[in-house]
Length: 265
Image (cartoon, rainbow, N blue to C red):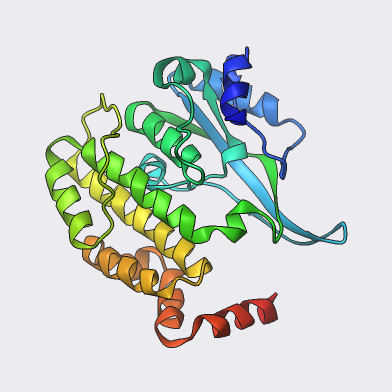
């Protein structure tokens, strides 16, 4: 609700929002404005983010992340390949698609940006635009299973918007117990190849699997891994970080994985 109030009051042509753990990097706004000027057709510009953790005011770990590859639009249909504070969108998006979905608490940014990627070009910059602080109280670290559930809900909307592929996608999700049946769907004006939605599904399942693993929900890890293996038989090659997580979820009890994470730091 607070973010939507901000979107209603914002007067600029380019918009993002910052949560309490987010910081903009020096020069970020200039880099965003330049990228939009270079790509006037783009509705959204995304950049890189430094994700860091602190202990007693001292940075203990940090890494730089950002979306990569020629299929970033498909990745965005499946999840969040870039961090939200490094994503800026045009005011026209609010005027055309409205505000964030208040019924989503964990996947509202994914739903919003997927709607933009479904209908409009995206553009990227290699500039580091923001810093994102992770700590034990972060929503991202406490509620991973909720993220996975809402990602399944958002992709179900996308499936209902997939034109001729809607039926096969919905049937696939239902067979694996991953379909959320509700009236909501996305508006789609572009003609996508039918393979695009299946590629987006693979990314969505990847994100769901990671969230469930991080949340120690190992039964759901197995459920999503089975769906991913069917949707993308080359998943182990495409997502090499996932097989070790799936093996641990199958063979380790949750408490052992939690202990191993603390030991690893």
